[in-house]
Amino acid sequence: MNLSNRLESMQFSTIRKLAPFAEDAKKRGVSVYHLNIGQPDIHTPSTFMEGINNFTDKVLKYENSQGMDPLIESFIKYYLEWNIKLSKSEILVTNGGSEAILFAFMAICDPGDEIIIPEPFYTNYNGLADLASVKVIPFITKAEDGFHLPSKDEITSKITKKTRAIMVSNPGNPTGVVYTQAEIRMLADIVKENDIFLISDEVYREFVYDDLKYTSALYMKDIEDKIILIDSISKRYSACGARIGLVASKHKHLMAQMIKLGQSRLCVPVIEQVAAANLINTPKSYFTEVKKEYEERRNILYKYLLKIPGVVCEKPTGAFYIVAKLPVKSAEDFAKWLLTDFNYNNKTVMVAPAQGFYATKGLGINEIRLSYCLNTTALKDAMEILGIAIKKYVELNN
Ligand SMILES: Cc1ncc(COP(=O)(O)O)c(C=O)c1O
Image (cartoon, rainbow, N blue to C red):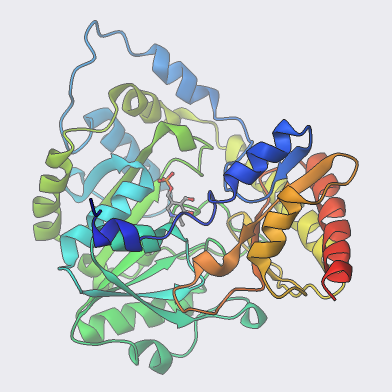
């Protein structure tokens, strides 16, 4: 029996598809440094675990579909610290930022409608767009420009009658770009002039380096009701397993309707909501320390990459990723080879081929995305090994 075209045409997650080869390597006794996935090793704040202890109910009941009041109130308080004013009716708690993205697509697009996204972009935007039968229309951003936005004309040239939104991740996954205020203003002007939405995925808001200033889309007051904010506690509090995120908008009708999507999955896990509500009590020093740690890791990763002959990349300024061009024909073949045929002192590294972060066929085939979610000692070792591997692979294939 046939399966749906929707499922058959969806891509496997590029980040996860090499996982079986990594498992085989581990079974052979080779240890694998994971530079492929954005799973931070930083401890989740103890406030979350304490929050779990706050749950004393005798029955684990369904909760309301919008999200529990204490959690929504804690989000409102959190945003005020960023100078963003949101009210209760403007927030819908979701199963991570992932569900927030799906809800945004489902809420504003009919099948075949288009969302314009700078590429490379977070690979799951592709899968989620497929789920919602939405077409991703990419425009290219380049490593040599630090993945900053192209001109307004270049972006508006992608707008058609089917365009419903422009979507950005700021700071960017996989690029590490942090958009300037002028860039966010330009996006605001485009959505205003063309009467479309701006979906702003800000899950890496806390991870901005080099003392750069962060600009939320919601700082653009004149387009407030055109913005759909995607957010999550996964990265901010190193709480990926909690599966708590949110979608927020000042578009009243959108939020009033979107609750139906929430109702279709009843509610978000309750104990995690209770625990997440307590995260607001996390000391500010947590963020200072985490940011310092990531900045140091970013510096290490970049320094090592610069030393590898043939590697091209720009220093990222946000999130915890970098896209690097390698002196290879197929980054996917290289990534697989690292797990199946290579080891150095019984160790190897796992990387994410960057092709899946593009929508345009043929782009990213010689690029990889690395995440710096390893401690500095492990990261240095992993980068030494990656350097040795690239040299060896190039020798073998030339
Ligand atoms: C840019 C971006 N948005 C959204 C997500 C989804 O995260 P989650 O569903 O864990 O909140 C991720 C995860 O890596 C991401 O990188």
